[in-house]
Length: 201
Length: 304
Image (cartoon, rainbow over all chains, first blue to last red; front, side):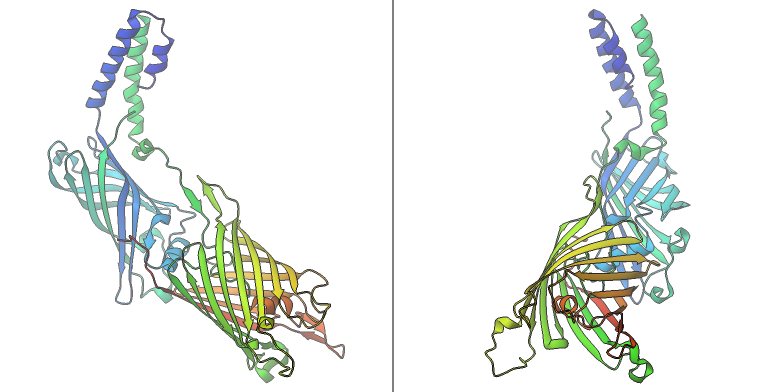
């Protein structure tokens, strides 16, 4: 659609011009309405817990980005590893340095679909149980995953929530023997986001 | 007519374009430029004897136990120097992520030291680009050992030493960090007129990461000529940082028995290798360690 504008500018002056702009504008609006509605956020909360009898480790990231296309059910997430905050600064350093190697692998991403998106009526408020399927990339390793979640359609917003587990070994995150009892093999991840409609340019 | 045609063409192309966008939804948000600060340039806030560019994180207390042993040259007789030790206990605390303070007490000359370190520049890339990190350190030392001559008039001020230091560091890669430390040590009392009260030295340090948890560190302080008595020499230290969860073990070889600035910069007595009084080859290498254990006192705000 962006293509139209320079073409219009190249046209000769005249009464045609006005109509042309009007028509283009109308078409643009129509196409906008007809096109898939997208929702997004830049402050998704991603929290994780590693729970062992010896040590409980928690971290939170409040600046995840996510985009959801309600028509196709496509959904993409990106989380900056360095933005995870721990209670203990040293743990945060080790998380970045020794486990996630965040300089080499700065992001964790999810790119996939809400498998049963047709079940969700985005025009009507309510809570819907859904399943997300797609590719999760952590620590440079990509895995096909399928996780359950909830979509809550609110007044102009879409809330997404999901709880799932991530096994460190699946993503080549090695835990050395000395701390094996302190770090869980499976990390519980909790994701919460309130998505707002994306305005198209 | 031509215009309408073009317009039609453009409109019919546009769904194709937006169709391409489907492949990468996140790209629709555009790349938000952030600043990426260099972290973990060193495993802890000391290289060996002197400071590194690292600060203790805000709200974190770092308890340090450090030992320097006798020279190793006597072998098994004194267990490679382990029979004799100078000790320093220290507490460092991060007030903010940029400002830290600390105190310590050394067995040698019963010195109590206190310091403040402030990180002025932080190495970063992205939105804000800064090639180096820069810190300023001010350190005061009080020698509390009894004056050798009790008869003469001894002033309290004679016990005081001050150090000002600039730390300039760059983390070149994940594995390499280099640091320069222009340093001024002020001594209120010196032994002879020939010795200077203000001593200028330049330190250089570096670390190489050997594995995720082990680094090799080196630190050297060069004292500019004609400032201190010729019986003193420059301090060179080489060591390993081994990090194990909550602790950092720094094991090193150095030619200084001191862990205070005035001590290791202006009063190091033996070189790594030197000729003894009778012309024999001797070595002043000592084994030493710093153990750092951190405790989170104040948890970061707004965590949950």
